Image (cartoon, rainbow, N blue to C red):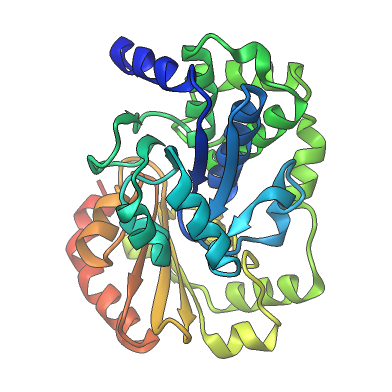
Length: 338
């Protein structure tokens, strides 16, 4: 944030505000962690604050402090719309285009409130009065910590806020292994631990609580893995029937895509997941090194994200999607074998 933006934010927050905080659709740990931490900070400053999530999110995030205050736009639509319509200020966190909120998009477009965006994805839209965008950041949670620091108020970060921020940084950095994890990230995390974040307990809550059905589904996913050594690529497919067979719950496939990158010599990994209700194949893409899955997803699968982690979608069948993918992959052989 530049000095003018900091001055603007300080001026806005110097008066009591009715604030709505919005994550993207299908929010992940970084989205919910940043929203819940900012919620705690703004409440501590005396504002009226609500977090409104576009839809539900995984069970492994629902232990987070403040989770019981989150309003689900799909389930609590009249209340959610009332909050957005009555807001004087709206924060959008971990996304940079209003199309990322699904059915909530119209409500946000019609809102009279000023917007503040905090996000680390590429190519931000220009809807916000204040835009804090930095693609070099590890996570939106690290940016929320910085946002609070810019205001000179890190002393207001309590154990609950620290826990939520740590969760988002941990999940968006792949437990601190991605290239975006900087020395500054580690210094932020150290301060969060000092402020009360229990790193071991957080890791257990997010990663070490499985259901038998999820582990069975992981077994199916791994058995479906296709390895293409000539392209240093591995991909997984999961059909709707396979999801149904193992009682799929939102978030159950979180992290499955990363198993491909654990194979020696693999630098590009994907998972294709059928969603029959939406009529799409949901795609998660990961890479190691300089191969940009953000560019690949934007070019071929109506998606995007970061250089090493992105998402996309296909409206073709699973069979046709895989055939299309195998066809275009041939054009990337040189980039995958530098």
